[in-house]
Amino acid sequence: MLLCYITDRLQFPGNDSERTRRLLAKVAEAARCGVDWVQLRERDLTARELERLAREAVAVVREASSRTRLLINSRIDVALAAGADGVHLRSDDIAASEARVIWTKAGRRAEGGGIFAPPLIGVSCHATNEVRLAEAHGADFAVFAPVFEKHGSAGAGIEALRAACRPQPAAGNVEGPGTSAMPVLALGGITLENAPACLQAGASGIAAIRLFQDNEVRTVVQQLRNIPD
Image (cartoon, rainbow, N blue to C red; front, side):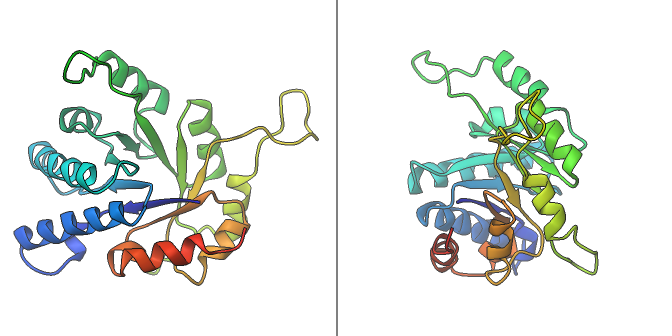
């Protein structure tokens, strides 16, 4: 099961400095507790502010875990400048294939002249056709949202998630087994109570803000990973 913590420091109490401190502590906690991906999604910040925060987030993730990967929401330039592991694209951003080309052409080089690993690229999707398009463009994963009702807005529902996760048949074999391997994560109103339904519908994992941010991450991760296959 893949787990993705999506950040939103504005949900923390306090002034901006306190919110940033709480956010970085939560990012470190998520990394220590085995969350696979952290998506830095602070949309109110300027590029310079986001880069500064991203550099701090990269540092705490590297210190806390060798496994967790940090993605920057939408901004490929910031992800490159901060040394993040990849980028998460909105549904109306450029295609994953274009983002990968930009990343490669940027010629990211590590100290000593070595080449950095290829980026991890995720895409936000709100319909099955968007998931198919993301996969066709070589995205590493998609996040399908919102699954459940959130802030008064109706969710797409479990059946829509099931359709988005359903593997596509191999070319020329309409009735045969699917060959799609791109993970699709469920997002939107996810709780420990409804997460099993998402996994039963075919989701490869869970992405969430409040589920991780408002609770002890270790407990959440343990309960999610203990959901039967």
